[in-house]
Image 1: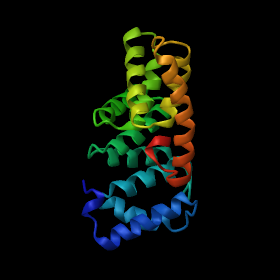
Image 2: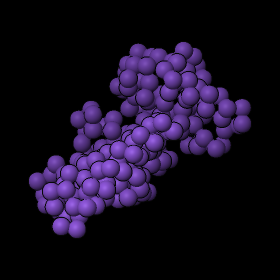
Image 3: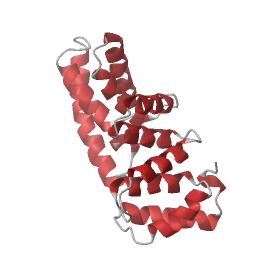
Length: 194
């Protein structure tokens, strides 16, 4: 597995340019640029190809190819790749595989994975799982994750974490809005918004 830092400077420039174009919704030529880089092991190219095939953006939608690219990208243990693979697996009905990938990403302190796994654990009927879910949401919120703050704030306002948690819930509710606004304007692809 090659990571992006092992690409030549020209290849990195191509990759960044193409990724920027994809974010802007310009899909023409993406496959021709990303496929060779992905075949050489560029994780970012693999993730974008997985996304393209998953959503049918610039290519015909193909879940098998999307899954293949997400799996290949995750082989190096990248938290972002594990997170994307987890979301893919969960959306295709493989909850167990998805949770395993989220657990691995959480082990690297990956904020979006903390949020995603926290939300899933809150759905459990097991009290220990639910408690861990709240703890993961707190970790993500402490790092500025907007949706974790939004999920925690109402529980805090209702006194779920004791009377002292109520003022913190008010603060968290307000800061979630301001962080979302700031991140949305300055870095719409921020982990704080995933």
